[in-house]
Amino acid sequence: MLDEFPETLFTIEWHSPNYTPGNSDFDLPSEYSQRGAMYGVGGIPHTQWNGVVETVGGYPNGNWQPMYNSFMNIYNNMVGDETPYEIEINGFAGDIEVGYDVTVSMDADMSNSNQKVDIFVVEDDIWSFWASVGIYHNANNVVRNWLTTEDLTISSTGENQTFSGTFDLSDAWVHDSVKIVAIVQNYSTKQIYQVTEVNINDMNPDIDDDGVLNGDDNCVSVYNPNQEDEDGDLIGDACDPCNNLVYILGNINGDADLDGSPIIDLMDVLTLVDYLISGEFYECQESVMNINGDNYVNVVDVIILAQMILSGNN
Image (tube, rainbow, N blue to C red):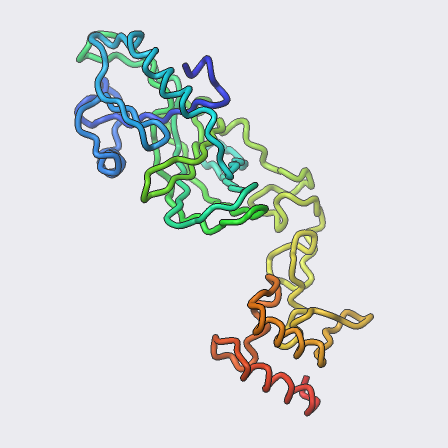
């Protein structure tokens, strides 16, 4: 099935410490126990489809052909499910260290309540002898490292979130067979909403082709070879929604004069009042509205801002 549906069917394999092939290092005891507990794994082999449909057991001597029809029914019932998430994995692969950037983006709204991103390192195509059944078996996408579990904080159309990190390649792995797998999963319902995998050799180390590697680029997906960052916030000007030299405390509407200096005037007072009425604000305004620094934006901030302007202390 993996050969039949390479674009829509992805697997990762966890191997019980008690049932790994001889002379292998398949097992990750603590991680296996954690993932197994998540799904209530008892008997094995155990298959969990999209996190919510399970099958338990197999056929003698590793003969999985009789399972094909039942697996196809499960697959066909799930393959058309829509998801608001897309995942892109980029990075670089050295001889020892691999760096990755996993970006999750949304094309529809969905609650982020208990939504997580899991990132794994797997090794594919491991030809091993399984003494318990006396056969050789090709193990696919065996988990080698559970890199991280992170909270997914985005929830609206057009938003994206990137998770970055590094890991070391083990000498015991065939490096050309190593992949990174990322999934979006709800830890309450166990539903998996998206999964993507990439061989470490196929990652793009410079997404925007500006000559600066992703890990060093202050605008990973926007071409900016000179890495300009006028306000020094480590976000390049080419992709920075907020110029922090303009959006200073009190300049709530973000206007500036011809020299680029911020203007704080009556329009900012009106903008702050509008926020208090509507509750709506732009990303750049959030950090410049709390005039008195008490972590609450209210009418007191309006009064203090008006006093600043009238006294000329703006």
